[in-house]
Image 1 (cartoon, rainbow, N blue to C red):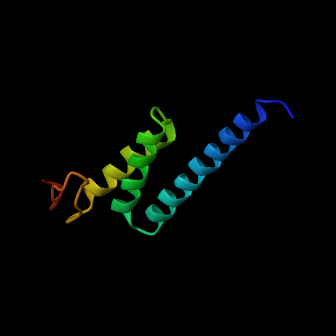
Image 2: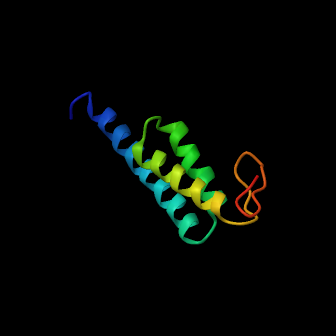
Image 3: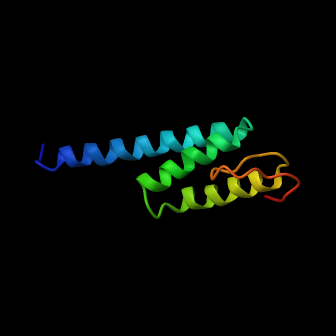
Length: 84
């Protein structure tokens, strides 16, 4: 084994970890737990800046939260009938 093999393992582990976070966020979203899903997607975006999957998901979940009457956005503002 070369001296770089350890780096490959760390890169692979990081990819597996990132995929696990994606799956958790998707499970929350599919279960209707949009606020929890948003929190996980935002955590992914902080951990992996520039991740296009996380950025698209954040936009999608924020739109869902903004359009759902009575749902609170991550900033704590209450949305009622589409208005803060």
